[in-house]
Length: 375
Image (tube, rainbow, N blue to C red; front, top):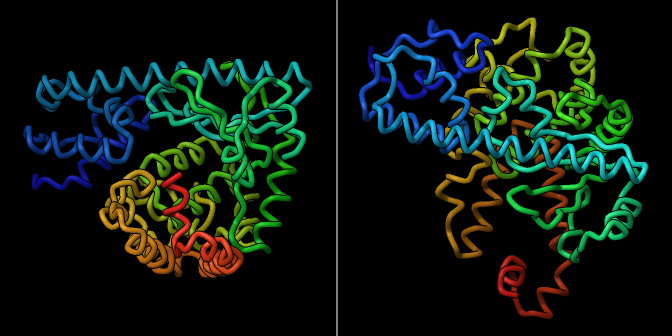
């Protein structure tokens, strides 16, 4: 069988998310170079431990060479250990804020990982912990609890970045999600999420999670935001497939009815096509009709940029002018994925640019990026 890296990866992903991890999904026999290329792609997409679950269940004659297999196993063990740290920290923080009388919920990360066939196979990032009370109240509480917050930690409109303790990074969210760029759909999105986040559930891992309808809406808006601004990877695609795998028909119907008003319909169509392409997700399990044209373009973007677009070569330039031009082009060329969002993003950018002209004149710098990175 002719080697296709994409197809081989898709076969392994189908196997990895299967509850039984059945080898029937992978009938190929790859040579050493093909395995190295595939593992490099997994690293780029931050899904090495996910794919390792499939690889480790293959018959011996189909597995990678022993040296590569050992390296892969070590990486999977590191991911497993980090997941343990995140679960323990999420549980500790939950109890800490409960002692202060605050409701909390883990928004992504550990909340998603626990739904995987093997909860330790998802490559974890940080902990996104929603704490009730609103911005001013949550910030005041953090200071009262002894957390040291600096001005640059408070720049985000929806979360506070805590200073890392050990190997775990934590964001405390006083809003359930970042906003859309369109003020109209954004207002509807935030009202919906604020309502849904009130219903949380304690899980055996020791922390609270939001409802499935909240997760489907919030994470879809989160993925759209990152795709339009930076990029996304297969890690986020797998997350959403796992959510849909656990969603009920009622969950899907509710989200389907909200997609248009929340500004997520076109992007959701592209995502559904990708889930069908990679995992064979049946149309009856989707939250809307798949959009093949946009889906193909999105999948191409994912493979070019890797996780969060970190491997896109055009973003590596150190000159601010090149970065600025690339940034504007990178956003505008995704116009058809969400025209209203892209228009809102650009209007917001230029409005902010005009408001900051006096700062640029004061420092005689056209680029504020230069000022932020030379302090």
